[in-house]
Image 1 (cartoon, rainbow, N blue to C red):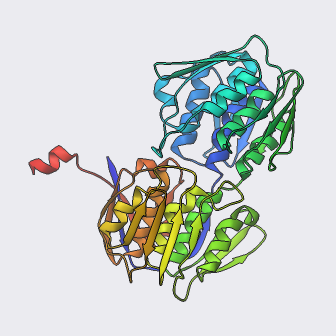
Image 2: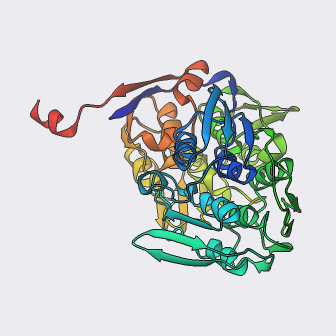
Image 3: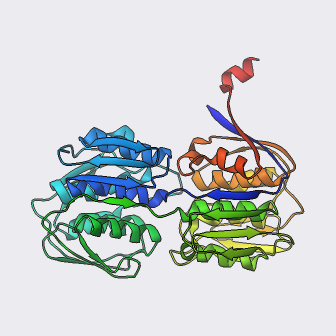
Length: 427
């Protein structure tokens, strides 16, 4: 067991390079199955969710070769497996993308119900709605999802709610179906567009990604390609908030500023200076943090993944802020940890009210999920004194080299082995 030990109170200064997008990578890696050929995927983040995806591909029969720590050659030519091992699929939510990819190529797939962060119910009904409309049958038994079809045919599908996962699975399962598939009420996130671009590079015909309506015209076969994954907008936003929260001055490099617009707009309204360049943003704070009203929404609204990080920032704003969580049920679990640090936060259902305090105090903390964990890191960086964060495996699912990157900005952070609880009590 490992933990982070952070001594805060120091403004972050310098430059940080953002890694490839986790949420794009976990969709594009299963999509290599459709190529039945050799794909080279560049700018893959070196994180545990990517490692699990690569392991699943390998177990299914793909030849996976590391060219460098962020570039992999994946040959799915002779891949034959269609059952994703239970222990692997439960390690991350995005394992359900293997359903769409395997169904599309082989007409069958079996994957366990998705794991990952516990943010409340993660229904897969919209995913199954797509598969069913295309002609597949599905069953869920003992936590295993099984889909199979003799033939997939294009269909017109309207999503009951905006879902990134269902939109991406819709594209994956439709690219080789006969005829045209029209997906309506689609998610518009940058990683949805990135998956569509990858599929098109492999010979698919996907149009409209990034809008409400995506049209997929089925092709008979696809082929390999070399593809570089977009920068991670949430990792970029996390370092932007860290710079603002600590009163620092940080150049965040290897980003697409347009993808960051919802985050940039809120930071500016909070009194933070954000300067945009072609592939970088500079974040600097010299004055007080101003209170905000935030309502998380599907893209291009404010991203739910950034909500815990902004909550930490608003805990020391000069006034009262309200944050409404419209996407996930359990996204305010980090508030209990913030209260340990002296934050004044009240939660009523899906709304949190932050009364800004002068400063946060160090405390023993835990990462309840990926983004809550990142928020705890920022909170510890703000507090004068030393905090320890446990359950850091959640954080490492989505942030490549977070210790090294923060140290490069002047943070006092280290990862240490945590003594087992039973041994601590015995000593």
